[in-house]
Length: 158
Image (cartoon, rainbow, N blue to C red; front, top):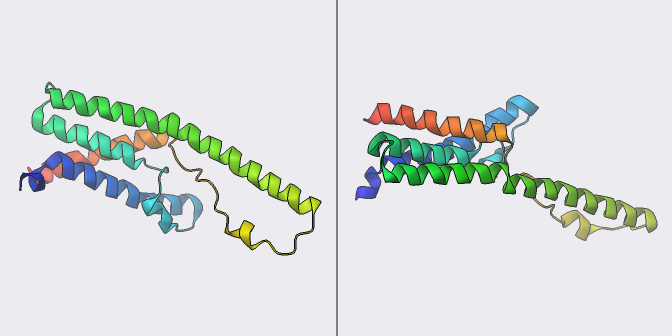
């Protein structure tokens, strides 16, 4: 099957898995605690979205050339994805932080106003996800991750 030989696809998938995996040791270095949930989370350093789209574009560039229409499509796709990661998705994460603080403040107000002895429902409430988007530095290093990994894979297998 030709799809099994699609270098750009495999490089992009490898970049996603590598970027997600490397988040765990990077977080450990920064906080001295291991958080395996980072393997499946959005956000964080490096951006796996940026790694994926830059790996895709790099793979296409290596195989089809910088002057090919498919490289133009993949490059614009990468730019839009990386812009979105630092823009809309990041702002959604910032809003989630504010909403979570409002929920916490409201819960404190309720606690102060009434003496609740048992709050199992409030303890089970899940917080909104705050780590949705990426800081520009996370997108930058995600992009570098995708390019570097694709170049290494290309020179190993071709």
